Image (cartoon, rainbow, N blue to C red):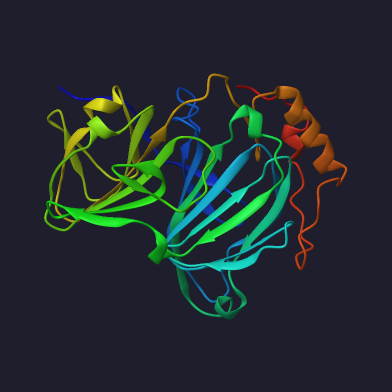
Length: 298
C-alpha cells in the first residue's frame, strides 16, 4: 500500500534572468512542516555571457537555506555578509523583522562558461520569532553529519533526526536529509521521523507501494511514520519536514508571516525603500505591479 498522499510536479518559474523549477508552495499544499518554499535551480549550463543576477530583494518572517550541487553563488546581505557558497555548504539566513540580500555569479566566473545547480528553500519562523533581528550563518560542507547504512549515504543538512544534529541553527523542530545510493536498496526511517514529511527525487527513481516515481517530483507522505521505500541504483533523494505550526502562514512574494497585515506593511516599506541596504550592491527588485493591489492569502 502506498504512503504517498500527494504528488507535486516541478513547475517553471522565472526569478529574473533565470528559470527555476518551483516545488513549493503548491495550491493544494502550501507548506510541509515549517518548509514554505522550494525552488530547484538548474541544472543549467551558462555561457560566458550568462550569469545569475538576482539583485537586492527583501524577506521577512523566514529563514533561507541555499544548498548547491554544482556551481557557485555570491551572497551579499544587509547584515554585512559577503560570502561565496559552493557545493555541499549551507547558507542559512534568518530574515526575522527584515533583511535584504542579493545572489549573483561570482566575479571570477562571470566571463567563463559555467554550471549552476541547487536548491533554494524558505523555512517559516515560529510566530514568536517572526520579528527577531536578522542573522546569517555559513556552514561548510565538511561540518555536516554524514554516515552510511546498507550502501546508503546519508547527510543531515539541517535539523535533528536519526540520531544526528546539523550545526545549521534552525528555529523549530525540522529535518532536511540527503540520501544517495549507487547500488540501490530499501530505506525504512519512518519510525524516527516526525511532523509532516515529504520526499524530493533529484535523480534516479524510487518505488513505493508498487508505484515508481521519477525525478522532479515531491511526494507528500500520508503518514510520516510509514516512510519506507525502495531506491533504484544511482538515485538521490531529499527528505524534509518537521512539526507544522498551529497558525496558518501567508506567503506573498518574498514575505512569509502569520499575519496578513504584517505582509502589507512589508510591501509598503519595500516600496518606500525603508528596508536596509546591501553594502556593495545597489541593485533593486521593485515589487511587481501586479502584486501591488493583491492581498496576501494563506
